[in-house]
Length: 442
Ligand SMILES: Cc1cc2nc3c(=O)[nH]c(=O)nc-3n(C[C@H](O)[C@H](O)[C@H](O)COP(=O)(O)OP(=O)(O)OC[C@H]3O[C@@H](n4cnc5c(N)ncnc54)[C@H](O)[C@@H]3O)c2cc1C
Image (tube, rainbow, N blue to C red; front, top):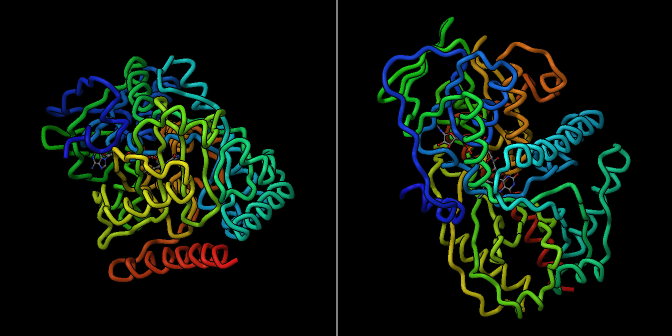
């Protein structure tokens, strides 16, 4: 499959002129591996903060080939898996610190779009997290109380009739509105940021997979056509990090999938409302997320998340999940019973075993970022800035954040890795099913 088939966004983002691969021997101050949000954002920040240095991005396919060109396009404040998990693992002060970082991350994306005039269908309409059964309603109310006590940014509670007045599903029985969330076209955003990084003086090489990394005072990074000797290396390889030996135990690639409908007719839109075009999620563990595209297609993703034996990262379609997502669209919106589905795709997100992001180092001059947990559109962009500060050796309010250089739980090798991932995911699945069956039995 070519990159255009990896998502609706990559298919429709317009003509794309690929950049040439790396050829020959190079030296650089900073070599960045991976051309997604993290990589291009790090390159842009580096050139803004230290215009004189040489920063190279090496991307194995094309910019936006990974999750950055395939995600649902929610730029949002969610950190890690859920606030309760962050509180349990790190405590209230760090939960607040994470929230402040995420609010800042959403602000950064808005600012980047404006200052570089990136045409990426950016619309800041908020995120409505809906409850579709009483257990989800209780969970959302509990989370709001926790957020209030911990001093997190404000959200609002909407009762069932208020939610249904905004988006009409017979299943919605309450919801939390977070106004600090935007929707965008991720492929257009990552391409726009890559252009901005290049205009600032960063170099980007595509079709340049890093095959070998040799540590040393200058790290040597080899691709099929060339090599770079770099003072610092930033691994911005996210869920693909299992391919690189030093990062193998730092995270697991977990796949999530999306289905997309044909454009909704004016009658279908009228039946479900959604005039404010906000992003929607539900309160499951393995969430459903939904949104409208610029041309009013309904995008829905989630429902399940899959870890494949051996940390495989290329299982980009799954017909069983596709089927369940299509059924879920019709169950949640019965008014769309006859809707036709036109696209299905997916990709790997990066999950750490303690379900929180991690910015770390291997050795004195190699940095990495993993564990965006499916919430990386805003987070990966700000992480790029944090990585840039770290690479420059600067101590800033970004580099002081608690998940930089934190102690993480290493992922064990197979077969234990498969068992651990399977147990975590099965626990989440069973609880979701239990809550849904309970609600149907009422
Ligand atoms: C289906 C789906 C839906 C999602 N929806 C949302 C959402 O709505 N909101 C949200 O906040 N997050 C969402 N996410 C998560 C979000 O997309 C990611 O967290 C974010 O894009 C991560 O960006 P990144 O740059 O770190 O990684 P990526 O975009 O994955 O980039 C990593 C890059 O590294 C390259 N690479 C890998 N190995 C090498 C190598 N050896 N040499 C050179 N290059 C290499 C890859 O080709 C890839 O382009 C979703 C993810 C998926 C898969």
